[in-house]
Image (cartoon, rainbow, N blue to C red; front, top):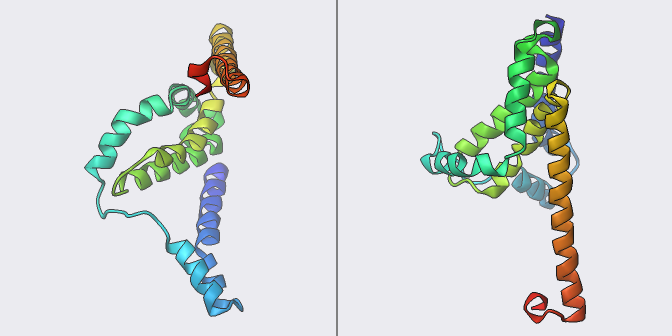
Length: 179
């Protein structure tokens, strides 16, 4: 019960902190020009729909799995393990509840967008990464070693490609890469 109260209290305080800015701008001693700039920035949200967009759902169903590839399987493993562990608080545990609620909020935001894009996928990754981080203690050593090896291999190949392209641009050889 204590963890649930803490989670609920922190969520309510977060919403209050988020919603109080327009009131502070109104009460503050801002010039009309600065008040207009602040309010336009506050209202500058992308076009939204009153119901979930089929186009956004289609975009998510095609692109989310590849875009969030290393993160979403680990997040599912983490949710499956920690969600059924009663000692840690199951689904009410703050380490699951807070990032999962952030992910669900981001998912709802993307679904109600008029037309989703890659930037919308980016806002879902941090909360999924937090959830996925809690899967690392429960994975087998061999799988963790494979993930480390794959990450090092991928980053090495990418760094090598960047270095080769940079060297080609500086020296002009080979010409096809330098252009």
